[in-house]
Length: 215
Image (tube, rainbow, N blue to C red; front, side):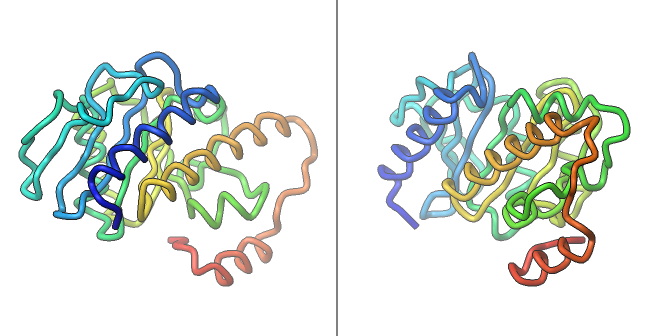
């Protein structure tokens, strides 16, 4: 695990990269990562991914007590739920990415497997993505919905809101949520066409070869 100072820089660098490429805008989105001592670094409430200050990230100790930095995002229940239910979670990212939100509004989307099997990469990086219903921003019920999955999913899609992804580290989580957005964009581009998706046999081959969680 990287040092805390390096981790602070990495969080801000990756957040700005996503902001600069339009994956989340304004003061939307939030991001967190585990520190070496079991605590958390979290983006503060009301901040922009394009202008995060490494020194002002919210700092929690291993007991979940805020010990430094600015006030954290109001979506802390989402982050906490992933860390509490997935022992492998080293980082959590939540975006308001356009295409994934648009796909969540489409009729007929599979709630248990939000992304269609268009490429192997979303399967490899995300497993099955659970579509959760709409919640008001900041509603602790979002965290309870994630806890209800009992750690079986690394990614969820909040309907009409945005994706949330947990990864083993900050780079993995960011790469995975970008794959989620790219796949949703492909799904929208292909909607209405007779697109050749991966067959169930091909999906299972990917799952087996890359040891994907696929419950």
